[in-house]
Image 1 (cartoon, rainbow over the protein chains, first blue to last red):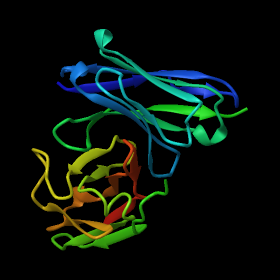
Image 2: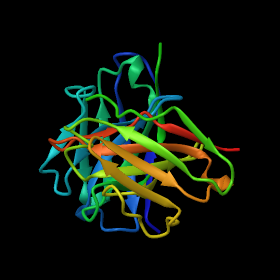
Image 3: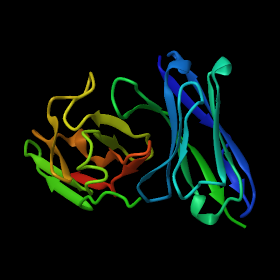
Length: 119
Length: 110
């Protein structure tokens, strides 16, 4: 079964850091670009970052540029998001999502992990 | 990058059709044929329903269809069913390897 499972969310104080992980299974992880998408409570979806299959290309939304770092370990079938200098507005459910090379869309999503930034 | 504009809510009776609009600019929706639509039930992850403006992934009922005209994309649900009640989000490629989502639309089945 094709599956993405996020972990690492939790409560963190403003200015703090957190590292999210996404474990992939059921497909050849190293062949796909991967993304992080977040959703603030009661709000819509927001694209956060993407990384190409070989980590050669990395992109960020302006809202997180300079604070978040996306990375991956193809040997471990894992995607990561290092979040630094966290702000209250970063509070959201963070989803990892697979970007299919055949379609320009996010075809597989994880169940999400909640990040709460509060003092 | 500003979110694409969707109506806050639409509703219809079972069997009816509803259409959700998604308005962007020439830099996103109007500039690329890379519009996708996602269905999200409460507390669940989004699910891909339409990609490349009008294509359906395997397993998505043909009651769901997509189209685009200029800077506005649309999702139509024909033969509305109770299980279609959910939030729907459009998404467009916005150039420079970035993506922008819509504001989201709540579909209510009366």
